[in-house]
Length: 321
Image (cartoon, rainbow, N blue to C red; front, side, top):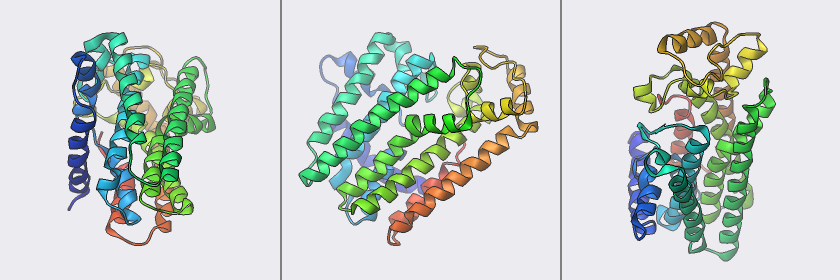
């Protein structure tokens, strides 16, 4: 089976569990808004990582399925709120939640996903000490996501941001949920704290690599493939690592923070970033993070699930969107 097949095999169960754990009840519009992005699909990478981590340490998907749903709901909660804060109108090729239900409705939809995730976690069947650890992990992760988002917004007000600051920001905003998924899956699967921590590091490192490569895709992928406006991060004045590297080289980027740009202006900016080496620099750094993350899986015994986790790491820097 291909990696897509392996993820799909597990995501089918996740989708079915979402229907059960987050039904559309009254008030219906609230739950329609809450389910909107969730039902739009997405890659289901985070729940897949959680399930595979559990399977890799000897458990099965059924024992962690509800927890995988909880992690996916947290992920979608962050997307809804991010789109409001970033004023992004498109998500997954569709109008963002706030474009349909308004900002107030979108905030409530995100809050519903957040609170339901912890309600789901509280009902997991496992050893109480492991459940408590996992709730603690997920709650700390949500706090770190907020810290990362705050830093991201704060960076937009600054002329310069360092590479270390960027890595701290994406480590909190993006990679912590991958780390949490891997660690929670391992713990609920019965792994030792040492193995669970190794899997957490795997998730953290590939999550950082994922975000770095995401920044590359934002610049080089056509809108019809990307599902949002190409170069939107640059136009919004976001200090991605590509921008940070280009500024460090003294490169001028006319559309940075401009809000909007023509296709010709975007194409010219991509050409400049390519010629100065900033896009390749970030690609190569993303690869190094992915490789380091893969090395953390040495803590696992060889098994098919370990191989799939290795493939997921590679996918982070080979995907097209």
